[in-house]
Structures are given as C-alpha cells and as structure tokens.
Image (cartoon, rainbow, N blue to C red; front, side, top):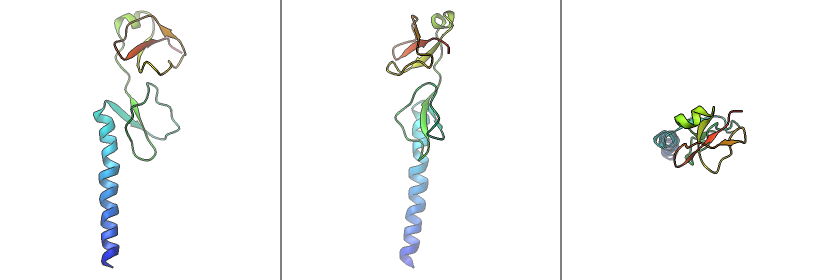
Length: 102
C-alpha cells in the first residue's frame, strides 16, 4: 500500500511540474501555446514544448512602416515561407521578412 501512495505522489508531482513548465517556457521565449498539433502556427514555431498536444507558436511581430506601405506584414523566421508564398522588398529587421498578403 505504501508503494501505491508513493507511486501516486510521484505521478502527481511529475504531472504538475513537468507539464506546467513547458507552457511557461514557451511564453518566456515570446510565444504562445496552441492546441491541437494539427493547427499550423501562423507566424512560425518556437522550439519549446507546450505539453503533449500543443505547439509553441511565435507571436506576430510588429510590422515596420516600410513593409506596411507595401501592404505586407513582417514574419519572423527567414527560413519559413510566407503564407502567400511571396516576399516584398522591405526591411523587417534581422530575423524577419516582409510577406505579401494572401
């Protein structure tokens, strides 16, 4: 019986400590958790855990005036394609690009 109580206590602690930390880690990195995994993050992913069924998504970055004048929006992640598949020749900072609207 003592083993059963210890097992339950260990599972309870692991569930609350391990399951609770990833979402905080995602938010600390400037993202938000999105559930379920099948939904695509609109502005890219952050390599942080959000529990078993979630993705850590990047928040929408502020759009620069130069990109805004061209009708676009800034997207973080130079290696990720724009949702429309088209980029615009405007500055969005070091790690972002100006994407054309869909």
